Image (cartoon, rainbow, N blue to C red; front, top):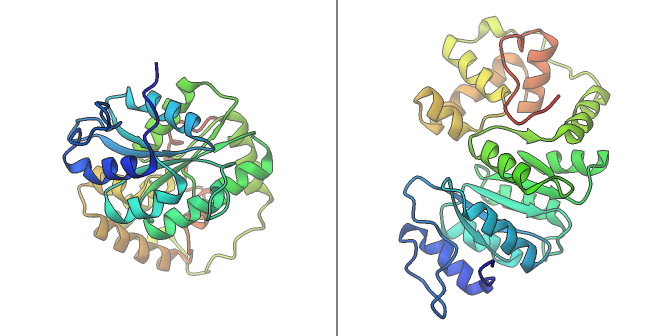
Length: 263
């Protein structure tokens, strides 16, 4: 039987106390925080308390995660007060910030390094495109299984972008319909240093700065600087333009598609 849903303040306190998990209880019930030094810290904010609690329970059974189901109204305070790695948000929730897409954008403005997984009520083209435009790194349809949901979160936690078959089809269609990007004539991957090219190739796989730093044994600040210089040299201004640039120029041949992206 799922544990009772923690009220807003209790959940907030539990998340803030992640540094010493398990120290807070309510009527003998331990908060949904796992004792694991290297666990990935996840918040779940779905359209209602029951859905949030069920998803948090499913994730909490995985050793990889420390999980708390919280209210949308508490998200910004939690992000400001504690370390959070990933936030799962239901797109159809209603909050003071708007719907789930609006909440995702607000979360990323507060903590740009946090990964977002958006839960969609359907896999329509508009919903999928809006999810990625809102900054989601994982897009999951409610029609999919709980096992696929766990797979989605696990892949995003590792620094990849995740989408199911129908969601990927919508994304690829959106990319095909975007007019060609006007790249700088001076843009040339040959102008990149070997290290810049390494960082660029990792970024093109959909990896976060944190994941790239871990993979290449660099600091996140160094990765950010490499990307900034590479963007200037290539004449692009975002990772999406970077992906277009490498694809158009055949530079993606040696880059494998991220795990979790189905063609």
